[in-house]
Amino acid sequence: MRIEEFSTVDLDENANGLYIIDQTLLPNETKMLTLTAQEEIWDAIYKLKVRGAPAIGVAAAIGVYLAAREIEADNYDEFYAAFMEKKAYLASARPTAVNLFWALDRMERSVAASKDKPVREIIAVLHDEAIRIRDEDAEVCRAIGKHGLPLIKDGMGILTHCNAGTLATVRYGTATAPIYLATEAGVKNLRVYCDETRPLLQGARLTSYELHENGINTTLICDNMASIVMKNGLVDLILVGCDRVARNGDAANKIGTSGVAILAKHYGIPFYVCAPSSTIDISLATGAEIPIEERSPDEVTEMWYKERMAPRGISIYNPAFDVTDNDLITGIITEHGILRPPYEDSIKKIFGNS
Ligand code: MRU
Image (cartoon, rainbow, N blue to C red):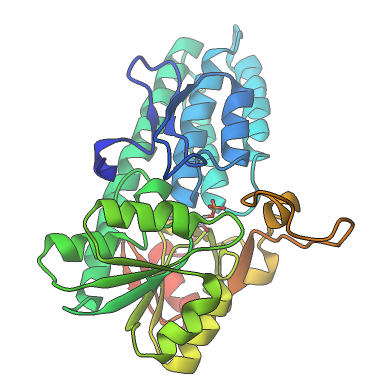
């Protein structure tokens, strides 16, 4: 099944639930879920059934709209207080991808701007804002693709890490958008290398799956093979996604990304981060302030194995993200164009003085 034939994340057709593809089952099983209860939606975000920064944002926007419909309130103040509780609950599902908070804040602003409306109209406003967040995501990803397209030439080898593809967004992906658009534009003989991305295997299970399904020449490698692939001259360009960019251009992405960037510098390969402007958190001065999610030890020791593959009682450290220092990043491809160092200045240009 071609990935574009189903939605990663949407409001279900009867507007009764959050409609997602369960990413934990891919590539072996394609199962769509319609989630209605808030606990189910929280759990789907926490367990990565829906994952990737932009997709998490869209899921949260739809989730909080569905939650708001359940609120029984006679006036704005009561409604707003209950809405803020629902918002805080969904915001607690994961800490690193700023799109979760960005989307929920947007939903809150649309409530605050509707102060004078009756509750039923505020619900309609929330519906429209969630749909707008969904639709903008596809447009923004396509624009990232358009700006990244000139970097891609016939015969290139491109390496990516984790899944910043269609599955992590509404459509096109961020890091994959330039690849999909290049293919659409007739660029020939592209080769894409996917890091498998331990421990949750987003590269193996999701990126290599969606690229392969879409007819792109894809080679899966273990994370520790990236160096030899680069050394052997097989990689001309690196494109990765991002979960949060600080004001100075430091960028948090899936664990292992900063190692790829260090290797890229060693081998002189351009390293680009692809990120919608919604992933830039101008409230943070540097990447040191980005909260890094730590996940369960079993993801390292047993999740994909027939039996436990580590001694019992051993200490496990399982950070889900790392921060790539800005001086390792050749450019940040956004919907507004490619930002270049110094990022403090180029980021300021797209946000103005806000
Ligand atoms: O833990 P995950 O799978 O949600 O992590 C996802 C990533 O790190 C992606 O690269 C990032 O969110 C960019 S998605 C366009």
